[in-house]
Image (cartoon, rainbow, N blue to C red; front, side, top):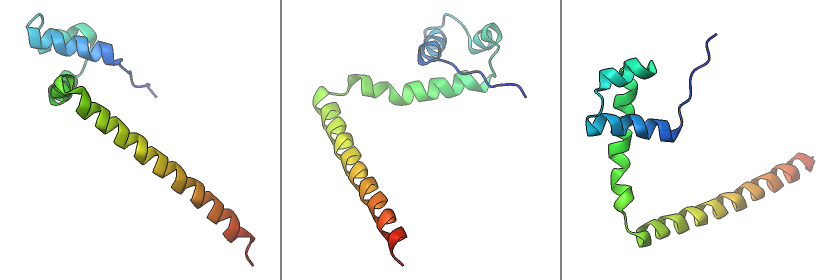
Length: 93
């Protein structure tokens, strides 16, 4: 069975930038790198969807990172509690 190729984020960004700047057409990029015609389109859509995040204020980004950290702490605590409860319930008759 043929293994699927994996592309780095840098490669994907370069392909999308080549297309957006007009250095190469999508067809040229696909031929050059032996890509499916849909792949650069998907990468371009993801790139454009996330582009506003580059200009997002640091305060908003810091707030989101703090929220993620809090949710990770809660998840860790709940996972630990779940493991303890599993051990206790397995010891009950």
